[in-house]
Length: 279
Length: 265
Figure 1 (cartoon, each protein chain N blue to C red):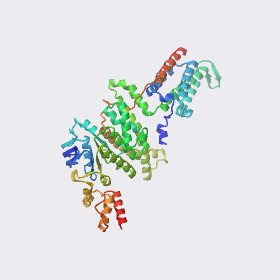
Figure 2: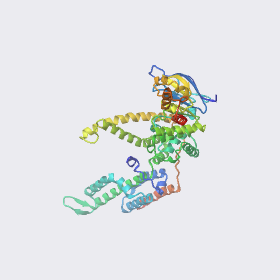
Figure 3: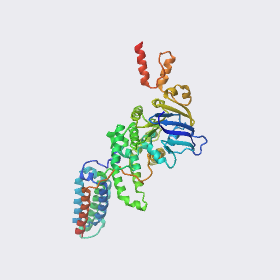
Figure 4: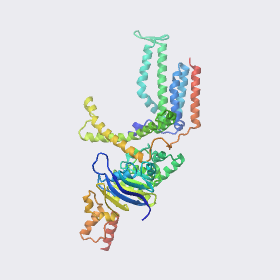
């Protein structure tokens, strides 16, 4: 396929004082421009995996390659320039007192010149459509807006990869849509490669490829279509399949003439309307 | 309500004083606090008064904001005034009330001291009224910059200050939420004897502390993920610009000091 941007080989990690490996011999590649979703129930090791990718933890065994750099104590600061990360809690990652200060925070850390910073802060906020909120304080923003600012903070650093670590799990449905739309646009403009870590399969349905983790091991890998065909197996892993997939399956079982499964509500609605007009 | 409590001190207007560099305003307050003690007669206090009121007029801050700043200190001012009136025994006797005599020196001294207080409070509140907390932090960081040579963690202190400012509203919101949650569980925050009420703060503080530590940890991880590694090689997004106006302000301070030396007895 295309150029490999991230490559994990046999990555194993154990937290101090625990018997079980949090991440156990996981290997996969991520190609440039791809949207990869990593799903799994709580404690499946998906958040640990995110921390490993950004050098917030180092694997006990195995190797992580970001671009052409092997992740290690020496390269970690360079790797962080390439890999941006958005975390779960919108409040706990907002460092600056205002929107523009927060976006500038990462740039300040890298020692970017001031005039350059002003430009990059502007550009980044334009891309997430938060440019009208330059001087707004965080407590006046909604959760979705704060997460978009966090994405802008990552964008300003011009990384290759963005990792969303449960970035939408604390948001209301509207905030979630806002954030996912922003990410999709950025991915389509080929600005970023997206790795989204989530337990929300509706979110994962929008990815190009899904990796299912269970007990720290790679359980399955495939396109959303392939993964959602596992249905009962997923439920057994403590994951809930999207409503549209479930509905379309039940309809087919009842003998409604629908072709294939439906990953999103829009697809299902479209097919049902088409069916309706045929009858 | 939240905003009023925390940032109500800062009145965002457009005035020459607002536009000044926070560094010059900080220096102004610092030196003003020193030179205030040079005044010791009517003329010098009048000079200080005129200087203070010119600054206030330039800042266009409505009087009621300044008065709010004075309110907590008012009692102290009145108390000092009375103390001096009744207990300083200098100069001629003005009134003889039988049990106590009021002397001229006491009255004057009392008025001088309370004026000194008033000017000090007015000028310092002018700083917080015309400068946003974050600018004050920036100004402090820059002014204290030279201390880095002696291993003073100036950048770290400034960052701590700005992060605290940033988290005050968040923690206030959280406090409110916990209060509601605990009220729903039967904790009574607003009535009962003082002892009970103080006790009821415990179920408020414990969860607040727990969550603050969690926040601090998350924030530290987020900062590290964004490449924060201390002050070394770091640039500043907010730039302070020293303008002619700031130089003028500093000059006016020199003039003020000279006048005070000239006219003090």
